[in-house]
Image 1: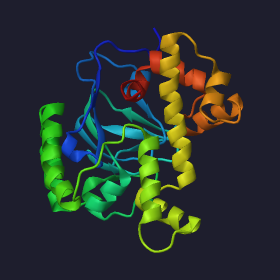
Image 2: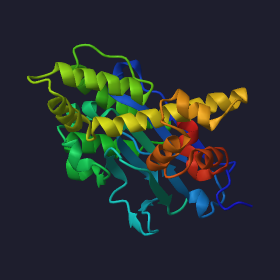
Image 3: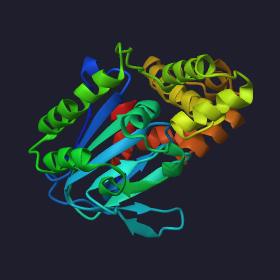
Image 4: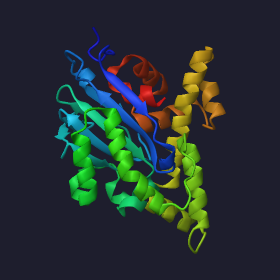
Length: 287
């Protein structure tokens, strides 16, 4: 049996936020491997792509480490984490069966609610207690004591909704793709404040999101490619060179380079791993 093959007893779910948090929370994810009698080394790992989103993460059961490119590992600093935007793919490994609740937040919303400088969180995972105040810490403790993903989401939304409503005069529409959100962010950057030069606009975008507009465009196009591959596979018409042309890449090699930069894998290897590798559970529920 493949060391990283899909396990029939693990659970991975993508949870949609309430409409009241449109423009703040993109989605929540729930991962539960405690029903699995045993997990191999490969099945205890999880791969995540580059992303412009910020994250909050709670390990309700178990513990884990980040795995670096050289194979070394660093234990997570706390069961409650604040995760910054990522410029490249990242891999984590659980020490055993676990339950984890994760939240993807739009970076400018997270900045507005917390005042954190997201450029200092780029490619970092830090303990929630080290960067957020007592009210966030109390909410975090409640989530760690929750019984399941439904209760986790209820606690999170009860905390965020009044704060988000206080910040926003009118709720926006939840972006369903990086591209939609990125375009809204660029428009706001042009319209806000004094000075509309390209350099000033890019400076605002980096302040709000932690990444440059060029990096955001790269991730948004890669995400569009993930969804297009799924559609074309279902239709039985996947041709990599045609896909690259349709999505605006210079050629197939350009598509391969950007996909590898965002995910760590070639497009075809990524496709195969999403379909058959337990460690790619986050891709399966996202795409």
